[in-house]
Image 1 (cartoon, rainbow, N blue to C red):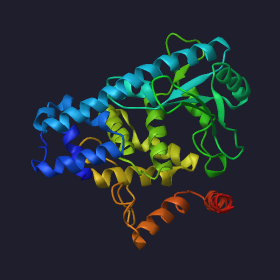
Image 2: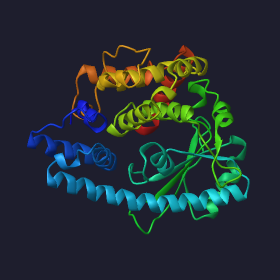
Image 3: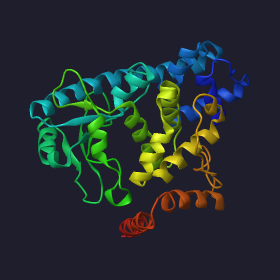
Amino acid sequence: MSMRWIQALYDPGFPLPENPSFFKKTLKDITHFGVSSQVYYLLKQQGKLNQTPVYFQERLKEKYNEALYLNLFIKSELRKILNHLDKFEVEVIPLKGVIFAEKYFGHIGSRGTSDIDLLIRPIQLEIAIKSITSLGFTVEEEPIPSHFHCSFSKKLPVSQIPLTVELHWNLLKENSSSLKINEFWEKAKPLHPYRFIRELSDYHTFYMICLHGWRHNMDSLKYFIDIIQMITFLKDHIEYETLFRDAMDHKTLKRLVRTLSIVYKENPYLQNVKKLPKRRPSFWHLDAFKRDTDKSLRNYMDFLDYQFFSYDTVRHGLSEFFEWIRLTDLRGQ
């Protein structure tokens, strides 16, 4: 699947390819990266769904319906969790998930999800854990001091995959940046009808989505679509100068510039939507469709560039290097 094809999802004047074999290959990629819901919904919005083969439409609609039903169930579970946490006066900000889909894509079924991510205050971690486990979730991952989240899971009657709840007290490992998470809390808005539940501002949602894509080295089409969707949705409401100034203060500038440079490089039409003022040449980056098969030097250089040279300070880079060595040793035991 060509990354340039994403333009057809957003640009009414950009035609879909006509080659029948293209759609067979594209359908495999869409399924592999779990973005059937996004593609179906965006093609329908552009009025281009009927320009695709019938089997292509039917498969996308099938996966869309699956995601819709699962998202409706997850939304119900999220409501129960938020009601419970709100009752015990636990401050929470839901991250990504069904709220993100409804707000930025326009419909609960327009972006599939399989878990629930919640940002909480570090000081309230213990009471948040007790609240989550009292709802039938069991500990899947104990809190790790150097990390920034822990996981809990519960079997679902509607899926073979358990529902996972991740409690985050930060968005990045503390020893990898100077991110000021309190700034995210200060700009968050109340989420009706709760007293202690809030939602991130558009600005900090975009910041978070870019960091999330970086953390996964943009290795899936879903990270590209999330970022592109927010750029096209918010347009001039995104202030890159402010974002980069804050990122410089937070020591996350290289991560944001790297991520956005990759997105804009693969989707150059975005410059007409929202101009990116600061770009980083990427000599090594491989797109998400080549990494699994490409074993060249370029692939390894891409990994090294991401793993060790995405940090604004030598201290943060060395910290990540030694953490990587430690985890490598643990995996080898």
